[in-house]
Image 1 (cartoon, rainbow, N blue to C red):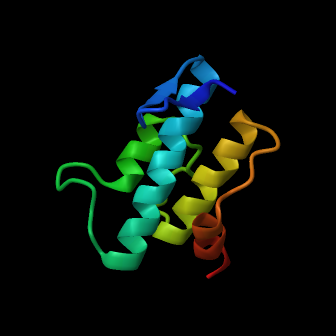
Image 2: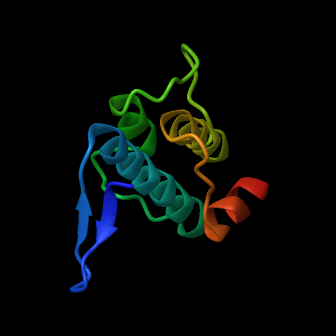
Length: 96
């Protein structure tokens, strides 16, 4: 795997596929935080715009709710990295 943590705590990501997975995973956790607390990552960007930037396939002409957007992001992560399993927090948010 090309996502590693150094002894000092830094994260090192190499490889285009893993960089995409890391970005999508970060987006998934941002969506969960927004669902749980109402806090938005920034005022200028919505999770939907970030998902569109990362080429998450969103149905034409729709604005999916946060939970549906989270499911779409997780599907995209699984497509990019077969065998990937969500963490307990992510699985809990998907089950709600």
